[in-house]
Amino acid sequence: MKATCVILDIGGVLEITPETGSTQRWEERLELPFGTVDERMRDVWQAGCVGSISEREVHEQVAARLGLDAPQVEAFMADLWAEYLGTPNEELIAYVRGLRGRCRLGILSNSFVGARERETALYHFDELVEHIAYSHEIGVEKPDPRAFEAICTGLEVRPGSCLFIDDLAVNVEAARAVGMRAHLFQDNARTITRIAAHLA
Image (spheres, one colour):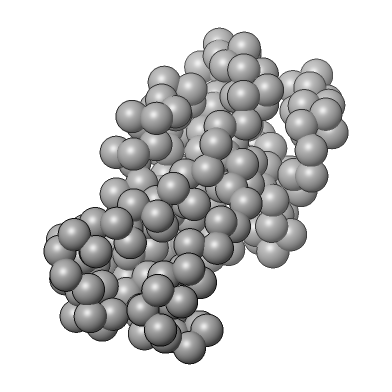
């Protein structure tokens, strides 16, 4: 069992996830003021991020709080998932795939209930790495230190042997605070160079 470890974020790193404007389009369609959806749904979105609500309950709350019928709820959620899932960062995924057997590989992602099933079906991240810690499954989000502890426990590695890659500076700093090496993702070239240096 090799101790050296690389841990990656999903959204903004393994997935390219630009904003699509779907929430704003729904607000226009429903003739709601800008920001209404997030204002009404904020606690539901947060609950979904830490797994304290089911997908069915999310749909029920969307219907109740936004006044949508069942087909509208399905369409609304489909738009949100399209933005959430984005498109695969093929170059980085291919590079990480080539690391299998050279180091331990993991994913630590702030997620939403239902993410594992969708990302497994679309991108097969479960085959890319050895362990995935989703916030909606472990009950805490980055930058909480417990999120980093969870992925280290799952991979059976020490923080000091890990390189963590994320597109948010606050999460990179949190990883360093628990003893990991960390890299702020800006592009594939610099990230691949940093991983190679870590493994060297």
